[in-house]
Amino acid sequence: MLLPSVIILGRLAVPVPVKNKLLQPIATAALPLLLKTKAKNDYVANIRSTVDSSNLQLEWINKNALTVPTALIYKLSKGSTKGADEKELVGRIEARGTYHFALKKESAALKPSFLLYDFIHQKNIDTLNF
Image (cartoon, rainbow, N blue to C red; front, side, top):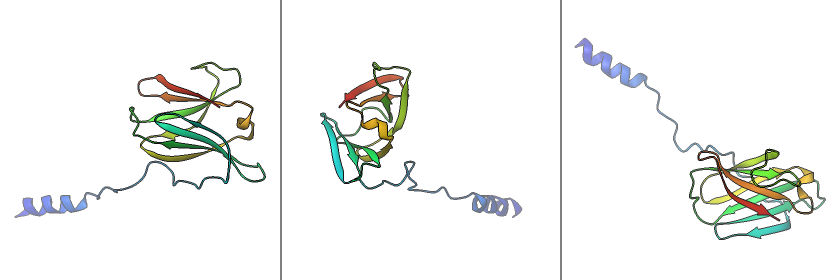
């Protein structure tokens, strides 16, 4: 009689895991002005701004699911080549959908470059030059 009671009480003491919790922060709205755009087969990347140009944003739209589980987007510093050590993390993308990332003001330079990087397999997926 004691053993079944302990089993039932032990089962009731186990916390229920939280479901439907997103790992990504809640999506922010797109800024109103579209400054630059670049479209490829699997995605579209836009650089957006506010009317007074005080804020910049990278809008990343995945048209299809990624071929890798997760990828990082880096902004390459001016004059960098593919895979250069001097890069700044912009954000992480996973599945199909729209992602918005805040950019520093100097990111809207004449021709910003971004690197899509698979950190699991440690390889460059694509380079995006505006």
